[in-house]
Length: 297
Image (cartoon, rainbow, N blue to C red; front, side):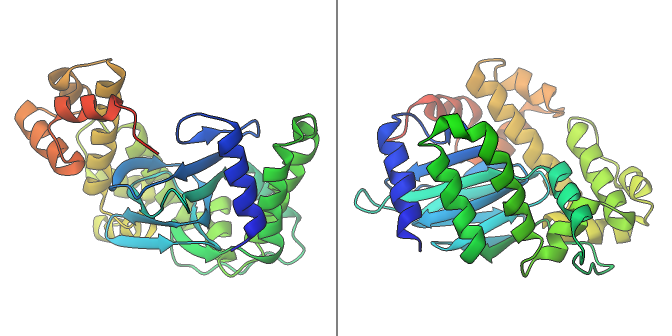
């Protein structure tokens, strides 16, 4: 654990009263803090590097559970729904984390500039994994946090540090997974195209054979490779997207439960309520009301 990073993140949250997550003056960089453990919460992960400075976090993607603590980071390379919770935190030692968005275009640019790019296997890469961050990568995260104390330097220095972070990811033990998603060539590109099609049309009835055709694979091969990438089946992926969008509609006041159900693709309001309660732990209306209340810590 880097005490310097702990001190920087703690100091920032103390100096900037607000709600979790703190979105900083650096594009695609956010800060997480919790003074108490949290129950699992569904959310939609964007491609990102999720660094833990203090405390412990758990995230579940489909059938795979990842636990990561100080000195570790979760790397997500594909937009995916998941359940995430703060597992270890206290007022004396709050959970502190930094989330750094990964821009696929920047990853591709750095990849193209490498004299010896990482070797890529023919297998579909993992869309998420846990890695240690130390040495140069840890130094980059610390420098990003220090930049927040000199905002006039952010436009000039932050893009360089972000590029360096990508370089170290492409030079690390999981370089092939990062690189293959960034390149999105061949089979991976086709599977990703199907994932994006499902993401864009999640409210429509799913036809696995149509998604398989986009990926240019047989339905069975597509199903296997989709799960290898996302840790869930296409049906599970779609259901979580639908319910996350419904929750957004309910919490924002844009729709009531019945309207939200039909807008995200459910034909039965009662089925929607059952599946919503199973995912969020309470019926739609009660959950939305509880979600609007500020959480302590």
